[in-house]
Length: 479
Image (cartoon, rainbow, N blue to C red; front, side, top):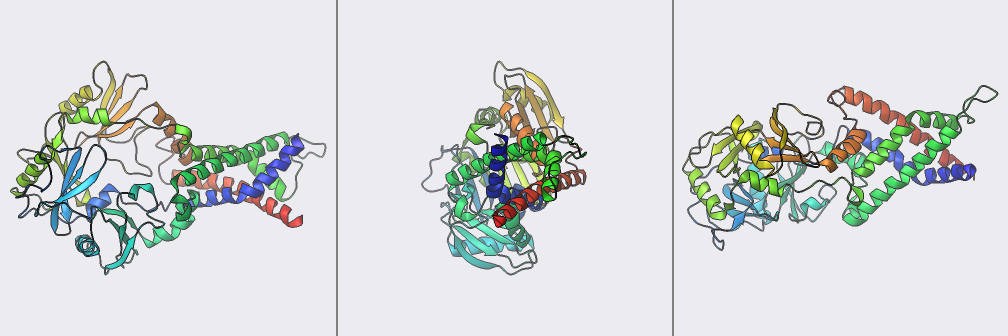
């Protein structure tokens, strides 16, 4: 039986060893070069300064005044101010605030005008080239772009080799990448996530392949750990291992780094939330309670008209709805992290107060649920922190005494709900983020401590996989 297990481990290593090596090396690359994306801050930075001259005189044609929307924003699309809408079903649309007509679809000429305005606002030193439309490519293959296809593709020809992708539906910047991200992305995220376009465009097939490849890798590593422990004992010649040469190195490296190999494979599997594990719950009810009022299209248009008659600070490039506890508020946003909360009526500054946040905590959970703790955080805790993603601070943390000990985090500037952590997401935080990224504590994820730990452990696990793969290839060659 034990001999059969050794044979099975060998042949599984021959079939999967190369994949585990690729996962290790690409994981090191991803520590420093993530998959390209546009953060919210980068999107705001790309917007021209908000100019509302001559806008908002017409009510949009074909729209009903009491049309309910979830949220809205006012920003520039090229040289035209637009009202961007999102409803309860996540559908996005936009209205030209000068003509009152719906925006889109965006043709090549309109997209070029938008990109030129963005380029001028960003101070790019390069010349803008229109590369045509793409349905999907390696950097836009994910499902998040489904409502924006086809995408208008631009090259900035700057020193960084930046490329932009604009939605043909709304004209928004939905993806950007640099030359460095594209080159290293092939060795990092594309390899690590098994993300080539041909496979990833079939989301269901891709999901199944990633899940079952991870499961197979777990069995390979698990069998190896069992064999390594069984083979460890002191022999008459004083040696603890029966192996020599490369096999000796593989045995001892496996004993030292085998547990890490297993935990990284397991936590990688959990990143896919397989079979419904570790999925979060909706925040729709809590968001509605915090807002306390519905938003209609008529309200959004009248607010835009009010803004047009008001002198906005030069930093403002975007205005977003932020109703709070039944009252109308707006968030004025701009480059450099500019964020100011305004009263919807007077358009004066309306910063959140402590009693506002306490009232929000009481409203958030509804009736019959008590609050265990509520406090303002200037820096992260165990479930809300900066590491791979930048989170807004300060936040107001509310812990409630429900069956899941749910945690809520409210943006300290707008009062809006930015995160909800239930029991499933707490498990996900420790079993995926904790094990996979070694961010169990703030000290462990601080730089350069995190880099040293990760590189040391990644080197050990990579050595385990490389020695095993080498032996498998050598075995095949000798047969």
